Amino acid sequence: MTDNVALVSRIWNEVWNRGELDACDEILAVDYIGYIPGQPEPIRGREAFKQMVAAYRAGFPDVHLTVDDVFAEGDRVAVRWMSRGTHTGSLMGIPPTGHAMEVMGISLFQVVDGMVAKEWEGFDTMGMMRQLDMVPAMA
Image (spheres, rainbow, N blue to C red):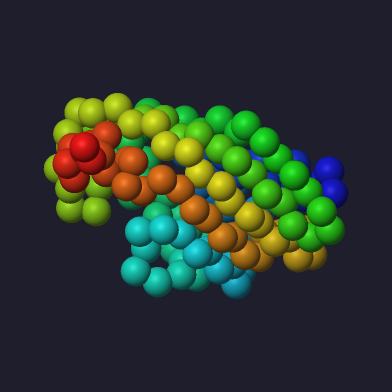
């Protein structure tokens, strides 16, 4: 289990926080599938995951993920995390707002043969959109 946690921790340390996209080749299975909010369909494969991360990092170049909790059982690793960044670049056609955002999320990873095979993620997309002034705040 500690090997699985160490493997998954590379996703936020190397890939998200440092933008080392090539690390995905050592972390993700060739047939990786990620169920990520805001994506029109599941992310399939390493290259698609790299493209998603690159697009997000283009919109939030200073993005930084911190991990608040990690739990592992068998082939599963669950992570509660916080993402912070400033929207200074275009993101999915949305021009930069210059606003800072802070959003909490939870990810569940399945590790098969020493590689991340699947990921199920949930995060506060509405909260992120409100912080970027993309939707009005609720009364």
